[in-house]
Length: 340
Image: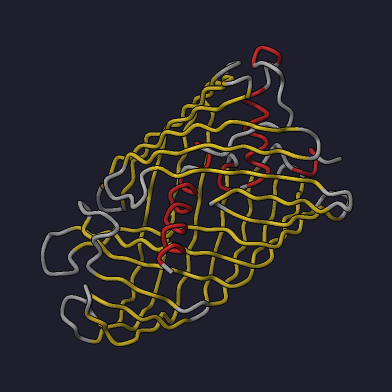
């Protein structure tokens, strides 16, 4: 279970900065100078995979009620129940400058979380009902540089990220990454890399990356981005739709205030592994997405803002639950155009 928690944490950090580590092209020239379209094709490739890196994405998620166990320190608390857990997310990506060998852009993200939870207050040990709304905002400036290393295309990226709530600005973090493309042809793409977290609250500072995509003769596509996601995909309806079966990880994070009678600020962070079915349908430059399946949350922790995720004052272990997600994203690089 501890290994699952660590993997989940890594996935959550990478998901927040997916543009910083997953940009690759679907056809790699011998040198960067052989093509002036590397940045454009890189963005198109990433946008085809994940809605969160598209120019605009709006989505809504709802989870069925579920029970959870919790503890403060080493002291177990009575079982609680989340009666309602709903989220709405809006994200946008802008590329300000595109050159032959580098790309400069920005990411904006807003997530609204509303929850109704029957639980034991970890500070007073009294039964309570938490019925609140939380607003999480983050923005990032992203820089990517395209070069070659050992005659292999390599993308170096860095991001400066700021986040907070509707009440306060909270943190400044950084990410530095490097990804090398080992193979890229019409059927198979493979790359490896590392990402470094510059964040005192991060549990893992250095994370290895492995991405593999292979198109089988029967039309199925294996799409693996470790430790981010694993999918088996299939284009349908004359390539206007795409069905995927597999798992991916998401992260929920928000800040809490005045919960212990002091001015201390806290952050709650949980990692969710969602497994099930995904259907995407392209309508012009828009993609409508529907997801459903089982959500597994290996870890949810409340910790002081200045502390590390490992220094939790309160930890939850939720039961698996059913979830569904619907979304609409704007993507001028839709797979409908790409696969005709």
